[in-house]
Image 1 (tube, helix red, strand yellow):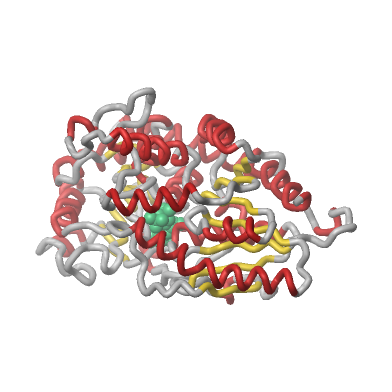
Image 2: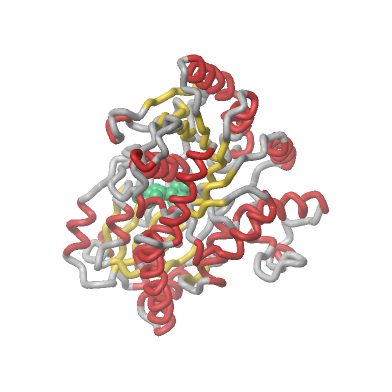
Length: 451
Ligand code: UDP
């Protein structure tokens, strides 16, 4: 750790102002980064959306919280994602500028802004006020060039709804297929607006990625070449700030007691994160696939995640009774604890980036079922590049059964487990003394001090 005393003492430690967005998967790593920088001696302020605000009582008492007037009432994660981001940025900009101006007027001469890339208004405001601005990406590094590819492909006007096109590898790419690109169901006009807004962003002074060098070395180099600013790979942040609870969802810890009674590596953990939603048909196919696989499972069914139901009403009749001995369902699990549990042998995941990092750090193999935005790219890396998981291409009960057995029972699963366990050890090294993420963090601390 770089303690405050190590600073040359001539200038005060800069105040680091971080922006926290209403998305759980963005807010958590942002707060982990804040905690890590605080442990390195920096005073911290969190400028946060009023929608899904962080809970100050989970943080050191000297953190300052700066609410932003977002005027939003609900997170829109799927169809209206691009519009939601536009509104978030338009609405928050004014109050962020007021906060920063006040902080400058109060004599905080040295301020560094670290902003979540989806809150790009903060980069613009920092630029207006002549303050250093560092962009923070909560996604994989590989997603950043993929985002540009999507724009190019859309400009070329390829007709992408056709299945055969979607399966093709994108020209000049040896890896990503059209279906892996972050196309969303968002109307093209909204995306155009979104892209236009992004392109008016201030160029960041540096970039922080919640990733690890050994995992994404090539993508990090590509990103560095694209942006031409220092890039710091300080992940996985949950390992650098392990005790932080984001506290925005109530964790059901009874599942840990249940896991304690299961044999080692026998349980498939199923969770699709904080945003993904599904139709009833998918829920039913998942349920029958689980029932037919004959494997133990811990399933997070988030209330409201199945269209037209509050929680479990639409599960097939008899499913709960039939699987009572070997299944457990919760609304929200203590995921990191679950993945680290000896009884968990596989993770059927939507491949949100935090979930991928948490799974790799715990040495758990994955079944990949991506839904939106960056999840398809992550799933492709997990299954095709790192070979620590399998891609579930269509959710049909027979296919689900086969996938679960391939991962949990077959030799294929054993081989993947060896690879992911090696990665788990490499993560430990990366966050340990002299590891790549620790070194990147030290470089980041030096960079902030030099701003
Ligand atoms: N999570 C959790 N309990 C759950 C489901 C998810 O604690 O039952 C946490 C998980 O550990 C991860 C985050 O929620 O840190 C989900 O982030 P991710 O990037 O994987 O997906 P998103 O929610 O952004 O789609």
